[in-house]
Amino acid sequence: MSVQSSEKNPSRKQRLQEKQRRQLAVVDTVDKAEAKVRKAEFELAGAVAEAVQVFGDDQAASEGLDMSVEVIRRLVGMAQEEAAGSDDVAGAL
Image (cartoon, rainbow, N blue to C red; front, side):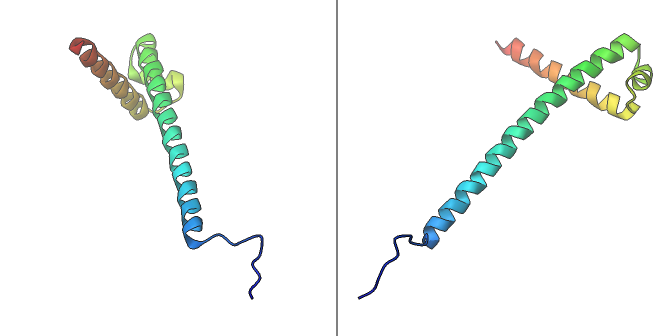
């Protein structure tokens, strides 16, 4: 007669299911964080585009914001793309 322990070790299937559950939870967390980063990047792009208008041009905004002109231009481009995209959506309604 064999004696069974009251604390049975999890089966391979259970261990795999737990590993997959943890992996999916981590992927979900990363997806949510990426969405927050994209949102923050678009907010930054809008603020930089406004700064370019206030400072007069991208060079002056670069100096005033202590950002490279390349970064300023990339962010202004993002803001323009976002504005064009929202105009397309508004026009479709």
